[in-house]
Image (cartoon, rainbow, N blue to C red; front, side, top):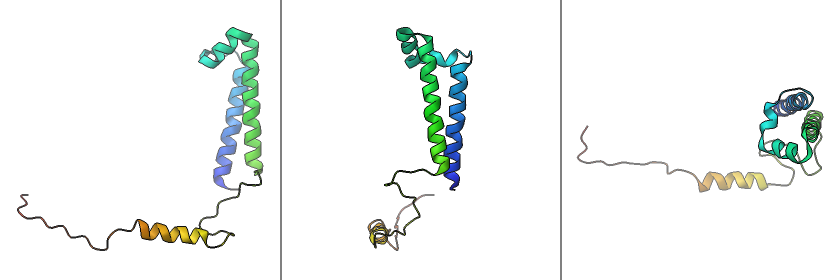
Length: 115
């Protein structure tokens, strides 16, 4: 498993835990956010708590999916410039080398320069 995936997955699980604790706890500061104030005004504080639970479930799902390495079929793990589709990556690397290369020698002539 890639260390980046471990970091993202564990952060998502931490966010899931925090948002679940917000939903079931008595901490009122998160309910001062504009979105949750609007939900609480319109549907009540119970609905705002349900929104926090839904957020925690979404974070939980994302964290578990990332840690298990689940990906859509079109998402492939990047392995650098090597690819199975031919020389496209190598051609892009060559284009990048020639398009943005610096001149080999640069001469600066300064006359009457005071130091």
